Amino acid sequence: MGTQDLNQLGRQKLVAVTGSIKTHPRNMNTSVVKDESSTWTECLLRIANHSDQAAFQQLFKKFSPLIKAFAIRQSAVGEQASLSEELVQETMVKIWQKAGSFNPKKASASTWIFTIARNTRIDLLRKTARHHQNRISNDHSEDGFDVEDIWIENEDEDAFNQLVKQRNNEMLHKSIKELPDEQEFILKKVYLEDKSHTEIAEELNLPLGTVKSRVRLALTKLRVSVER
Amino acid sequence: MANKQLVKYHPDTRFLTDYAAGSLPESQALCVAAHLHHCADCRAHIRELTQVGTELFMEQPAAEVSSGCLDQVMARVAGAINEPAKTPATAANDSSSSDAVKKTETVSLPRAISKMTSGNLENLKWRTLGKSFRYSTINTGDEFRESSLLEIKAGGEIPRHHHGGDEITVILKGSFSDQEDKYNVGDFIVRSQGETHTPVASQDEDCLCITTLDAPIKMNNVFYRMLMPFLNRPTSA
Image 1 (tube, helix red, strand yellow):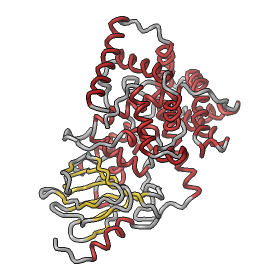
Image 2 (tube, rainbow over the protein chains, first blue to last red; image 1 turned 135 degrees about the vertical axis):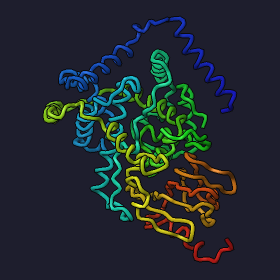
Image 3 (cartoon, chains in turn green, blue; image 1 turned 135 degrees about the horizontal axis):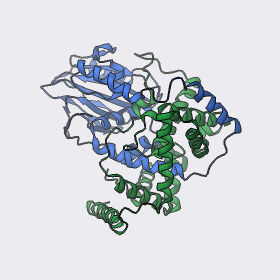
Image 4 (cartoon, helix red, strand yellow; image 1 turned 90 degrees about the horizontal axis):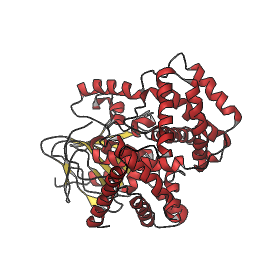
């Protein structure tokens, strides 16, 4: 994709964002996404500030079936029913423990929870791998990184204001539903099945370059910049 | 987060997407994290890419969770109530410990590396090769790749070498040049199998890098073996 196309894309995005703000000034109440999202934010804040168990149970009801689905799609975890429930438990316990570090200005509740589920899955896979293989012996017996030392929570203050961010998320929400099947399929492999580009290429018997370009195409449709 | 120096070489969309999705092997993710430490642009990309993952996650059809699961979680949570949820989050702990680190280190190192060095590079076990080069292996548990910290003394050179597999290098301190360009702190440099290069550190400063090298066959000290044939040869340098 040429620079010109990208510029074009950037402009469309800008027009779409500013356009929608103009037509619906401060009118945010039409969106189900927004309402749900603020519910989860409130729940997390109540857990953080009041150790509120009812709020926690509300989150559990919504998110544990999603975490379980997420666990099942990862083949090494999904094969064992006990492991997928373990992912649910570990993730939910971490949500409780870490609620104090949730900052709604930096991430939405669902992104924050997705990130914890993702990191917990990495951690769980590390632990199960450790049972199966001897760790490579070398200079350090154990360098002991936590997953969070490598998959670091984004600590940047958000440059966008909340309104624009909300609009962007709504656009993403809509455009994901409009993706062609092939692109939706490959993005789900990337994000839900925990498969790297290389693994997807092997599984689908495609050249790595083809997988890369399908992912890029999908991201471009979602207006996520892929200039690199 | 880090210095404002211009970062020129970035991980491509494939690396960033796999990192955001959590499927990138840990040894390579360590390199991406080192780059992100210095690159606000790529951190913003990661934010967007994580948002895509969140949408897909939220749209999944729900899977049934066993009836005992909530009870078990509540039992663990209730057990933790005495240590309230407000216990300082890891982030707060980390920032205080990395402040301590900064006092002894003049450069800002990525979190995982800071943790490994505990504030002093000499805490690591180094192997020296030749006059101007040493390395320390990092254990990431990845059996297909080997990660190391490399240090090239100011003006020093890594002997010309081939790559048996793909190699990612991220500069943590100083700079180096090869036939193609000069690379600075934060640059994410990928060299593919079969490419040859001779990195030379800049004259004024030692250069510290993290590198992850594909090792198609598991063996110890891939880096050492890769360089040995060259080091044993008399060189004109």
